[in-house]
Structure formats: C-alpha cells, structure tokens
Image (tube, rainbow, N blue to C red; front, side, top):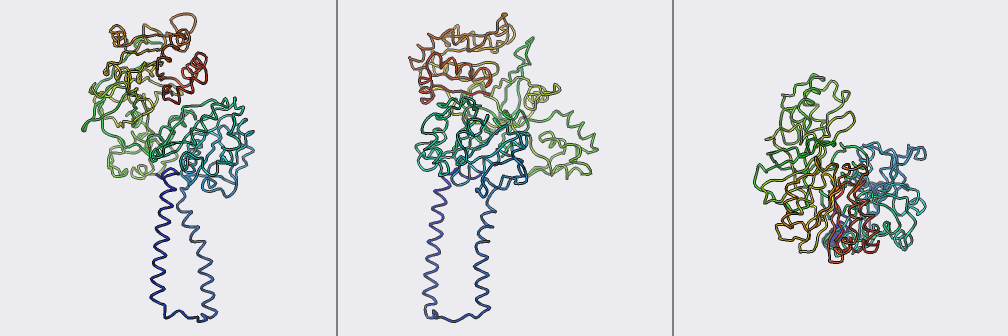
Amino acid sequence: MRKPDATMARRATLGNAILLGGFALLSAALLLLHADALQWRDPGAAGWLDAALVLAAWPGLLGRLRYRHLPAPRKPLPVADVAAGRDPVAVVADARVDTAQVEVAVRVVYASQTGFAGQLTRQTMQSLQAAGVPARLHGLDTLTLDELRHAGRVLFVASTTGDGEPPDMALAFSRLVMKRPAQLDGLRYGLLALGDSDYEDYCGFGRQLQRWLQASGARALFDPVEVDSEDEASLRHWQHHLAMLSGVSDLPDWQAPKYQRWRLVERRLLNPGSAGEPCFHLELQPLQGSASWQAGDLVEIGPCHAPDKVATWLSSRGLDGRVPVAFGKERLPLAALLARCRLPEAGEVEGLDEDAVAAMLQRLPHREYSIASLPEDGAIHLLVRQMRGRGGYLGLGSGWLTAHAPVGTEIALRVRSNVNFHAPRDARPLILIGNGTGLAALRALLKARIAASHRRNWLLFGERHAAHDFLYRDEIERWVADGRIERADFAWSRDQAERIHVQQRLREAAGELQRWVDAGAAVYVCGSLDGLAPGVDAVLRDVLGDARVEQLRGQGRYRRDVY
C-alpha cells in the first residue's frame, strides 16, 4: 500500500536527489577516464539515424515506466467526470460512456498531491460500481460550488500536504470557495481524510474541509474517517461505510485483515420474548498467546457460510468438497475454503474442476463489532443482534456468530484499535448515550471507569420493552445501586402508546445536561446512525448551542461511534 501524500513527497524528493547525485559522480568519472578521446568525429548518416531513434524512444520508455506504476482498475468504471489527461485518477474514466444518460447517486471528489488519494478514490469508485451505485468522479479543482449545492450525496477523499496545507489541486477551492460558509443544506457527505501524525497539523486539510462543510449546513453520512500513513484498519472502516451507504453487505475488502485464531466459548440469548430480532452475548478467547485492547476498541470477524449452504452449492454443481485445494499458502478441503469465500454463481464455474474453482475464489469481507469487555474479564465479549436480509436469510456475520458456529468453533478475529472512542484518562464526568447493541461499547467504557474508581457516569439507553430488551439489566442495576453510575435514564419506546426515544430523555434533562457539560463532562454516543445520532446531535445543539457543540468536538469531548 502506498504512503499518504506528505510522506511520499518527502521520500520521493530524497530519492531523486540521491539518484541525481549518483549520476553526476558517474558522469565525472567517465569524463576523466576518456578525456584524451574527446574530439569531434562525424558519425555518418547511420550514426545520426541511430541517435535520433534513441532520443525518440527515451520519452516513450519513461512514459511506459510511469504507467506501470499506476494502479490499474480491475474493470472500467461506468461513470466518471474528469478532465482528460488528469493523472492518476483520470484512467478511471471510460470515454465510451455517456455520463449525461446516467443517474448519479453519489459524487466522489478527490484532492491529491502525489497519488495516494487518487488510488483510494479509484478503489472507492470500484466499490460503488460493484454495489451497482451510479457515481461520478470530480477533482476538487474542477468542482464548482453550484455543482456541490445540487450534488445530493458526495464522498470526499482529501489528502494533506506540507504542514496542514491543502494539495496543490485544492488551493483555489480552499482560498476562494472555503473562505466563507456556503448554503449546502441539501448536501450529505462522507469524508476520508489522509494525513501523517508525524506532522503537528495531522489531517489538516481534511479537518478544514470538515469544518467548512458543517458550517455550510451539510450533514454527514457518517463520522469522518482519518487515515494515518498506512493504517489499513482505517481504510477498512471506510469500506465498511461504503457498504452501508450502498445497502449491500458483501463488498470485498481492499486488503484482507490478518486474522488471529480465537474460540467461541459462550453464547447466550439476552432478549427472550422480544418483539425484535434475537440478541446474543458472545464470549471469545484466543487460541494462541494473549490479547490486549482498550474500552472502545472493535473486532473484525472473518465470517463463514453455514455448512448446509456450502453442501448444497457443491451438490448442485457436482463438485467434491473433500478434495484438497490450494488457496495462497494454504491447502485445505474445497468445502472448508468455500465456507470462507464468496460462492460463485452457477455460470461462473460451469465446466471447472475443484482446483479451478479454488483459483477463482474471493474471501468474504470482514464484519466489525464493538467490544463489550476489558482484558481483565478474560475474554472478548460481543453483543450481536441477528440481522436478516431479503427473503429472511440471516446476515453473513450475525448468522455465523449467533447460529451457524457451534460453541467451541474456531473464529477468525482481529482486534482493531478505535482511538477516537477510548475512555477519558481523567476523572471528568462522562455522559454515555446509546441504543440497541450500541450498549456493547458503553458497557466496556463503564467497566473501565468503574475499574478506575470514576463514579461520575450518566447512562442514557433506549430499547423496545423494559421486560424483554433491558440488555445486561442485572449488571447495570447493580452499578446504579452501588453509585458507580451516578444517573441513569431509560427510553422504552414501546412500553406506552407514544414512542419515546433516548434523545427525548436527554431533552427532558436539559438543565442537568448543561450542568454536567459546564463541569467538564465528555459526551460519548454509540448506536444507530439514522435515528439516534442525528436526534442526540440536534438536542445537544438546541440545549448547548452550535458553537459549544463544535467546541466540545474540537476538544475531543463529543465523540461518536455510530453505524
């Protein structure tokens, strides 16, 4: 994976200087060696012709070498709106497509200095294409404010160069368009900000763009994703948002996570009798060594298909799942490999034997879940609700963890740091707001606070019915009774005729919210992106004011992990 723009620029400059210095030394040595032979001789017509051919071929060779270093798209993308010759992203455009005839659902806008943002933009377009989402590509230097006002949904991929500066191609937009807020009330956006934490103004331009969009009234599709150098986990988080935005669950990972081996040791239903889907408490332990994490961190799970689904697929195609096949450095039965990969359609494997099928398989994309425990608990705890797709089929990740994997099964798992949602290090008051399975991360944060003897904790939690959906009820009620949770407010949306949600409970406690924030409280929100997150944000802004909310965000006192 290529470095972000600032790091790549420094390395490229140093490498060019070393190379030129070496050429200079070599030229000087050759000059001294052949000083006596330096006298003019006419090479003749053939010699002049050879020299002309060499000079003509040299630019072509350089162009070919540069082209080979540009990552080629897997397939030509159906839509693009890039000025001809723009490098490197212009290679995404397919000139055979009449973009005027294509309905644009998402615009992807990039600002790149040396190419890394361009590469990620190309991969973003490929992911949207794979999900069937019409999209159009813009460089930030070609985008007008009027186009932005009417864009609907935009994904920005923005790099930072120098010490927090915009890339060259974004200078005009930054200085002319971003100098004052615009009217972008109808715009919904996502932001992938690239940076290098070695610089003081980390992701400087991406954060400037984020502040300008917020001040202009644009609404975020999801919280910004910041990438520090080669942080693969952050890029997979961006891919997770692309999948959610596209309404699909099987977009392939750009780069597969490096899983560790864990074992599922417990699975327990937490909401028997609920009107909603079943919700399970899961416990997993490492099979090799130990693992560490912090409250707020996530896991990435490598899901598998149900065994009967794989058996049906093999039988319908006349293939033997017991045949050992190669996949990378592994060699395992075809059935075991198919369980971890996308199952090809019938026409894709017609006439192929087991080895040929294995050669074309693609790993299933990861699923991510918040960790609900601390290392001191001796296991990773997850809170997973069964999700169902069209036709009532269980979702790939939730189906694997809650139904298809027997207790004792080995699970492919990787812990991923989520620094933005780690607990405050000091004893400041903490307001924890969540709904549904968002309680998982809040539970881990409460455990960390209790372990540190920090008691100024306020929990606001919402679900359907108190009788069936009060997840971890005994534990939470014990913490409240012991004074480890100073205040708790619950919203049971269906226990009365009028629907009540968490944001309403927060609004009812507006005076207390103001007092806690004045006392230095941090606000952490975990739960649904569509209902909870905007509802809570609106209450915070109504009670505290926009300026105070932005101040809290800038100070790291307002944090969200929403999905």
